Image 1 (cartoon, helix red, strand yellow):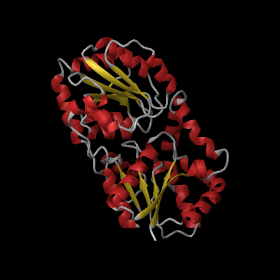
Image 2 (cartoon, one colour):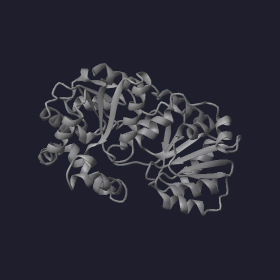
Image 3 (cartoon, rainbow, N blue to C red):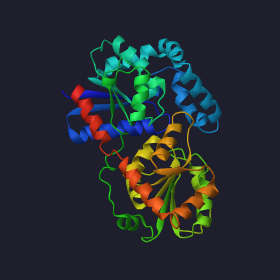
Length: 374
């Protein structure tokens, strides 16, 4: 009988599911037909109303309501009030989660979300599964929230040394924490370096410098303004804009008469090819996208970040000189123009620095650890 691996996620943004699926992919790559895996949104599928609707609030909280999100992050980080919240929520959600654990009867539990540790550990124990190993895979790159850290877990993987130091500060035993990098799809580990071939395959002009503009799965941020500024300022480039699930943004961009060759795409499954074809990556500071860009050896221009968990990502990029920050569309366009002319040496150095930060083996490393502990 195959051993069962249960991943706990919540679809608050796309990063947690993507990380879980990357590890899942790596497990089946390393050990074909050896494990039965489940990726479950516990809050959505196994908690009562209104808790099961909370993930739908996240896009608003980190978009239009970002000031409230910043306040919530600061108060729960500084005063550790998340423990009070967990104490209040646990009695409401415990029974259903415990019942689900009993039904699945996993051989190992892997949490890929900060709200899936303290509550889930209690449910594991109540389900009579106290001997089942419990792993936390932290997906925030640098600024990790204390909610990620439950000292009772078996093992904790973090993307960077800075995150490891915070995990220890928040109570995790040093011997339980390992720096693995950010888990991303194995497609990135085998991506091509042949930009000309990739551009030809994607229908791009082979000899034009290429900008890839992405704003996460929801397509938030001033993507329209940035793309228009680039088109008006940098006539020598071509551009690919990925709007994600933001269909209104795609329709708006589709109506533009572009000054440069421009492709407008919705949600894509060939991001390794798009990154491989690009010279500069313009994005918000999501940890998954940044980690993928490092593997693709792409200099990054960050135009936005979620206060709290993504603030450290910007600092990390800047400290390692792998990219730049600008929230002004016109300045972003001018930076691109400069990087392809007067600052070409700077662009080349950022390319090397990004490559030095790459951890393409992260998913495989984590997958091996998971299977060692089953």
